[in-house]
Length: 222
Image (cartoon, rainbow, N blue to C red; front, side, top):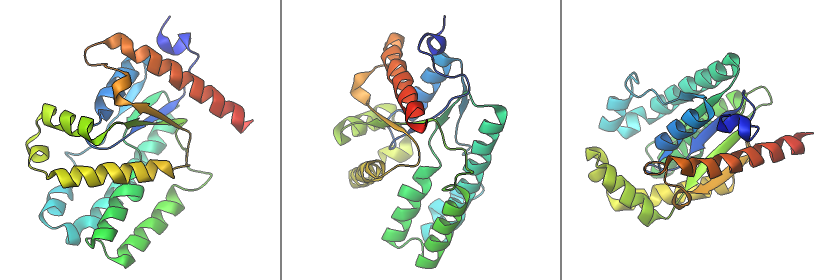
């Protein structure tokens, strides 16, 4: 008996993993997919036509980049539900507007008109009864010290050159976002509560919590 069957998680569930850079979204996505025999959905970065341009000129390309992300994530969400669910998704469609587009607007790298156009488009596409929201959003959280430590451990050159102030700001923006998020059920899990890299069995208590949360959410819908 696999863990999905053991804990009664529906085979058509869609679970999204959210959290700031370095918190371990990809690791959790793969671990849950393996344990539950689900498929994975990862962000496609290599085919993004705006990413290099964006890094060269934030103000010129921030709107284009965010609209591209919105379109790609919307298509991916539609594909997942048309397939019949059974997916673990790395990063949610909600973070783009709640964190990144908002940050660009507040920092002046996206104009007010572009920001209003983008948020109107997001609301028309996503914040409707017709959009297939995930069954559960898992928010991976941890202290800023723990997250910076993880970023240093994985040693990606671009991240090592990023000022600590940026990680502090991103951590706070994520906390502010999740505290007001209500588009779908949320399960908050602290990154110190498991160690799936060194102990695969530590995923089982996480799955038990996921199962309980999905069951409670389904009861509330009735």
